[in-house]
Length: 217
Image (cartoon, rainbow, N blue to C red; front, side):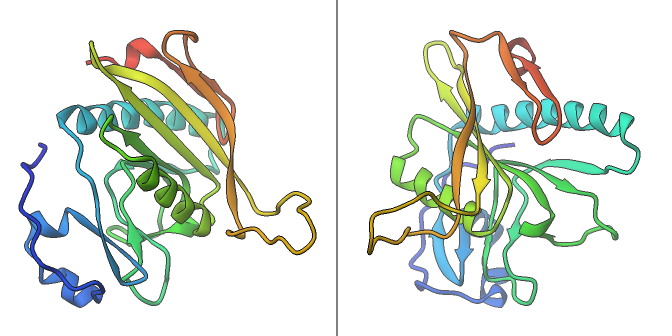
């Protein structure tokens, strides 16, 4: 159930995980810690949560179909789950809207970036390009091999587009004296538009075939 927006308290610029755990749930659910820095997460409208769940359900179906033919594979698909970038400390994490990750050895384990196959965000019309770029760069720096964006449209509400990005760990030839700002980057590997394509049809990192009708509610 979506939670109503809360007034942002005056928090310090940096926090430890222990300090984060002392926050009320309604505040903790509004922030991420990026190397200890407090990052407020823009909460979307109810449609944001609804489409996150619908997309998770479709991805889970595709993952289960893939696993049925490959018994050695084991994937789990979740929504709004913390992903940690450091195995030693917990003050560096993000919370993707949906994610696919390998099955963990024990119940209730923390999910680390090295466990994640796909991290995804559902982008509401209110999301800014700056926020989107920052989150994409964060996932890339964590080495997550696939990043997906689901963009919502209006009148009527619907998924307007879906884009899949693959992680590039090298970079092309640059002019002398120029170095890339980031050591890793995502390259657009697939794009599907609701008014052009019949649905999502992609074979990486496992076969993903989702008709638009499956994402309606």
